[in-house]
Amino acid sequence: MEVTLTASDLEFKNLIEQLIDVLKLHIKHHRGLLEIMDRKKKAMISMKREELEKILDLEREVIGAVGVVEEERIHLTAAISKALGSPKGGAMRLAELIQHVGEDYREELLDLREEMRDIADAMDCLNQINRTLAMHSLDHLHLYIAMLSGVDPEAKTYGKEGALKENKPSFLMDRRI
Image (tube, rainbow, N blue to C red; front, side, top):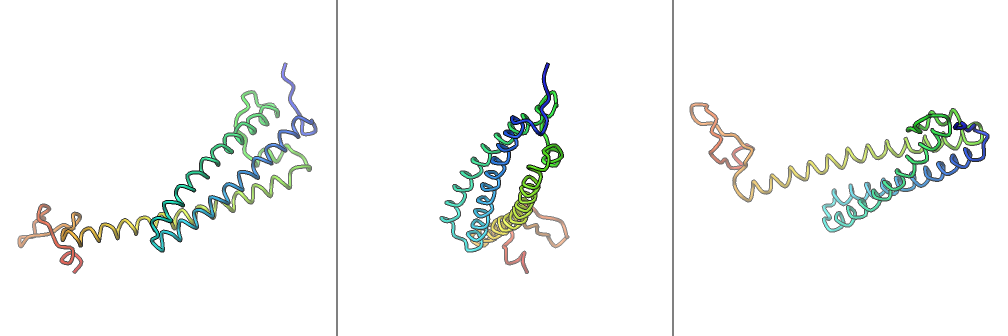
């Protein structure tokens, strides 16, 4: 027979403290990732290719570290869920957990949750900016290739009869005008 732990048990408190430590590390890695994303944005704006390559290597490294911490977080939340009586020890949201921890850990977990939300919002904003910058970079690349080759592969031209002639190359200047 399995005994369900309560928030007052030492083993449960130990799991919660481990989770708090993991969440703090999770936040630290995500703050580092946020800083890297900002550096990536600046490198993309200033078109520093070598710098961007270094930043992308660093970003992969930090993402790997985030993955390791995430695995530990999943393991701990499953153990906590099981300790609270879930037969499978499934995933548990932080908001759910906060209801079970009592006053000892509630404020700290709420603060960590708020900090993670702030980081996620900032990352979302930077991701949108970086996505836009990448798309503009690709557009510029296509423009330069078209200018160098004298042909725009995406351009559609029309003959005197108004029929679309897809096989006829068009000069970029003609298309733009």
